Length: 410
Image 1 (cartoon, helix red, strand yellow):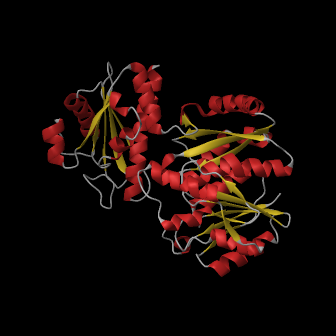
Image 2 (cartoon, helix red, strand yellow):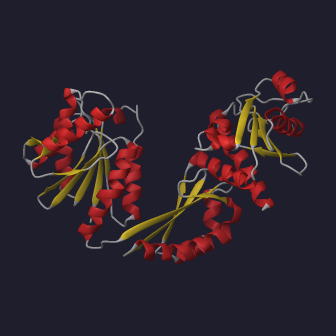
Image 3 (cartoon, rainbow, N blue to C red):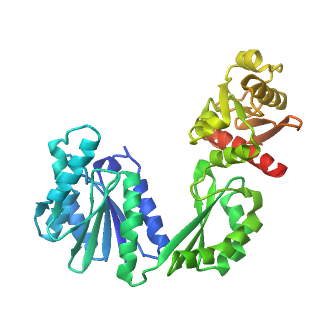
C-alpha cells in the first residue's frame, strides 16, 4: 500500500510555519511498514487543493491531508475533498451538538463559523477528536481512501496513532501492532553511534533500528517491532534493547517521552536531594526546563541568573575576575547550594559569542557540580554552533553531567 501526505496551508508556503507534521506522519508510516513516496504542500486555494487531491489519488492508495479543518473561510479541506469525490457536504447534527457542548463546557457560546466543522462529504466517516473542535475525516472514493486530520500537532498525532495507522494496517490485511522504543542519547555523534552498533543494525530487521537526530536534544536510537500483539512486539524489542544498552552504556539518558530534566529530577528524588542552579551564559534556560517538569517543586529550589560579573561576586561569592574558568564554575555551584539551601548545586559559565571573553574562544563552557560528600568539581567543554545553539547545548550538557555523576554514585 502506498500512502502519500498533503499539507494544506498558505502559511507553510510562506515559511511562517515549518511543516513538521508531514515529517512526523512520514515517520509513523515508515514505522508501520507503509510506503510513502511523496509529500506535498499546497496553499489555501480551493481549486488548487482539489487538483492536488485528484493528482495524488492517481498514484496513491491513500492520502493523509493535514490542516484546513478549522472554522474559518480559508479552511477548505472539507470542501476540497467533497469536490474531488463529486459529492456535496452534509451537516451532521450530532457533530453540531458535540461541538456546541465543547464550547458550553468552557462557559462560551459556539460561534456560527464553527458549524462548518460539522460538515462532512456525503458518504464519508468522521474521525473523532476528543481534544479539539475539528473532527477528522475518512472518505473512501473509487477504491482509494482520503484521511483528513487537523493541523494542530497534538490533535493530529492522536488521530493518526489511534485511527489512521490502525485503519491502514487493517486494509493491508496485516492487523499488526507496531511498537516503538526510543533510546535517547547524549554525548556521541550520529556517525559514532552508528559505528558502535553497526553489526546489530545490519543483523536486525524486526525490530528495525533507526537513528533520529534531534539537534539540541541529542540522537534517538529507535527500535520498531511489528507483531500480532503488543506483548509479542515487546518480546521482540526486549533482547535488542538489552544489547543496545550494553553497548551504549551511559550515553542513554532517557527512554521514549522522558526528557533529560525528568531523568535528573527522578535521580535526585530517589536520593531525597534538592537542587539549586547558578547560570551565566544560559540566562535561565536550565531553570526553565527543570521547572517545566510536573512535581519539580519538591526538588528544585530555584535558579540564580548571575549574568554580570559583579552579580556572580556579590551574590554567589565568586572571587575570580576570570568568569570563564574552572574556579568560577566551582564557586558558582557552591554559591548556588549555599544561597538556595539545596543539597546539590550546579552551575554553568562560558562564552556564547559572538566575541571571545577572558581569552577563551567562543563555545568555551565550564560546568560546576557541588554534591554532598564530594569535592566541588569543574568540567569544561568546547561546544559548537551559534550563540543560541551554544546556550542550548550548554543547558542539556550540564544536566547530563549531573545525571552521570548521580548514576556513578548508585
